[in-house]
Length: 106
Image (cartoon, rainbow, N blue to C red; front, side, top):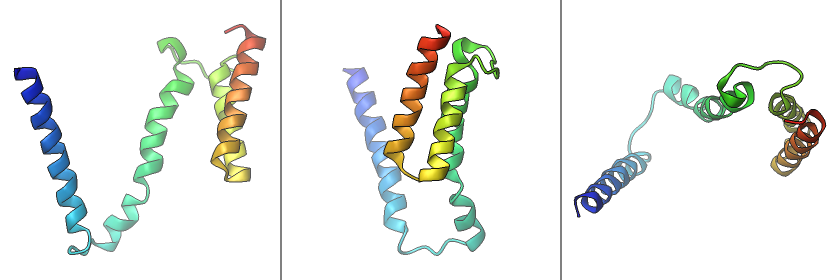
């Protein structure tokens, strides 16, 4: 019972925090410097999630051409830059990863 009460309480706290921030959006004027800085949060978070997966396969640093994940990620980044299409980026990255994994045996 204590577990479920804890889960419910944490869910309520999380919901209240998010609701309070969303409710304040129209009423509070953020400084321009903060607004400009907040634009960089999504790419920074995405990089923090993706970079370790690409460069640390198996927990060790591998930035060589034999790292299929890193090469596929670089190809996906190139496709994203050129096409600006999420579907093509994901498809190119996955096809490259599968092909390189089969080719390199990893």
